[in-house]
Image (cartoon, rainbow, N blue to C red):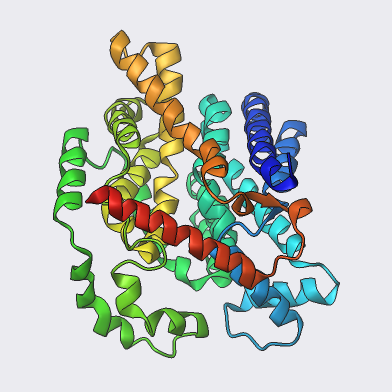
Length: 403
């Protein structure tokens, strides 16, 4: 085998190993309730190394690679001040871009552990699931999820009713990416709800109604309002100048469907229905996670067709992992799904959904799944070209399948 053909095998092996270690560490952290323990530090190091040593995964990853080097050469960027300041410090002391990626990965897993430790009974399941379900977005949107890491840490304080710490950490997160500002606001107001947002049958009806009736062209009504924001920031102007494009699809949403593939759709229906039952019980305190997931789910048919909106929806949708972990716990300890055929179907759909994260390297360009040791002469522009070509192929395949 040549080195390129080995990339998928190495990627899947390391991903599986990371998830297994996170599962084992989650079991140990659940006993102590401490992140800064041997198990917690092992989980942080494992995730940080596996994700922090990735290479070229995502258009934004490569865009920030180029930005990082340009700031180091003296480019006076007007992007969010804390981000630029940290990048300048890293460049001044000679830390390459990969060091910054390692920092982002470390902060994200610390944020994940901070929020998940509040429900220790399901930590062994929720930790690997949250890491897996957020994987593709976190790998790509480097600065966005560095800022979101602080929001997650802040949420752990909000759940302890320490609102001031929540606000301070969210403010710090927004200093890394000002676009995040709407997320902590929504997180706070959803936190005020002390029972499930909607009954599951209403959620399902709304989900399908939104998916069937939404048209991306309707977003053009917001184009003039967005154009009035020109001058807000350098990065914002790059989006505002192409508002029509981003509002009706963007770099990845143009040919996406309103609904996921059938296996994922069936699993979602299971999570909505049985997650509601688990959330209503007081044992796991999953009302907040369930409500965040429901908001993410109801926005999904729209967000999946508009790439820019997906950036806002994904942080809500990730909480599906916590709800799913709660269902696993209830199935095992309380026999939540009593009908054997439904239990088998739920198990099969879960396995199929998880398996898609392992199929990707074998059906797409292996260079999309490289680690730093696979890096040869790739530049940011070369890598962005590979990602653009792959996105076009995926878009064309999706368009043909919809006809």
